Amino acid sequence: MPRPRQSGRHRRPEPVAAPEGAPALVLAVPGTPDAASRSLAEEISFLARSELPGLDTRVGYIDGGDAEFPALEAVLAQAAAEHKLRGGDGARSGEEGPAAVVVPLLAGPDNALLRRIRQAIMNSGSGAELTDVLGPHPLLAEALHVRLSEAGLARADRARLFTVTTAADGIVLATVGGPEAVQAAGITGMLLSARLAVPVLAAALDEEGAISRAADELRSSGSRQLALAPYLIGPEISGGLVEAAAAEAGCSAAEALGAYGTVGRLVLSHYATLVGVKLQQAQGQGVPAR
Image (cartoon, rainbow, N blue to C red; front, side, top):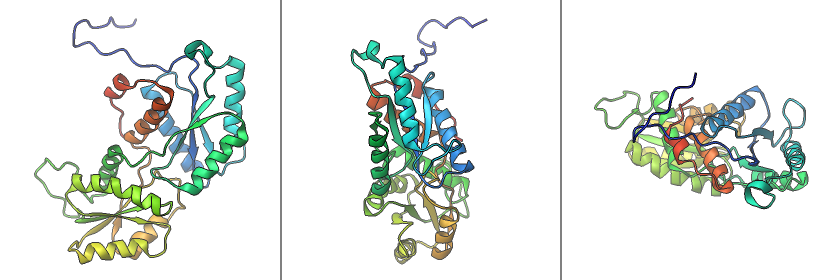
């Protein structure tokens, strides 16, 4: 039997649910499709649904093309066909809305990938709408801090009076996507620097020698124990690239952002902003870290 609702000011808020007829949330996953990227996308989708019950989440791969890893274009076309059968969301808004909202699974801007996503949307004929990439954002700085602390490269909490002997005194923030992506990563890097009270420099992981140059610059300014923090969700790059760059720069590396709770929260926030759904109550309940 369901428990009776608490009365008074201490009662829990009513959970927010996806509006009837709301468009599907489609994650656009970069990189070579494999079991790891599918697991990651499914976990982030779960995190989004946990804060907005009833949300229709789907996964489309930018480089997909079969039943196991469906291409983004095919996923959007199917969402549009199902949306048309349901008659759109006219009952909710008075006019037919988009069949889907596409959220790129990217921490920063990668113009080459974003062009391919826009092309897939156009080819699908779905009328889907595209959100911004996830960063820069303070929640990603939090996720970077957590990944560094998990690797023993940063204190988990600045307020606690203890030290980590392996804590870095300089961070190289590695990203991909060209100069614009490095600039955007630098904004999140400033937020991370404020959290850790150590210098942070952003550099391009896909530019030869860029990580080593950033490491040399940090060392020349006085840092002695460096760490590499991937400003990546995970699927964007091939396996081993982060480790190779860290070895070249002579420093340890943390894990990519992955399916940390704030990543799922940002995905949902981008979707909700475009659709017009308020998430204050749902986000107040928190999302467990993964």
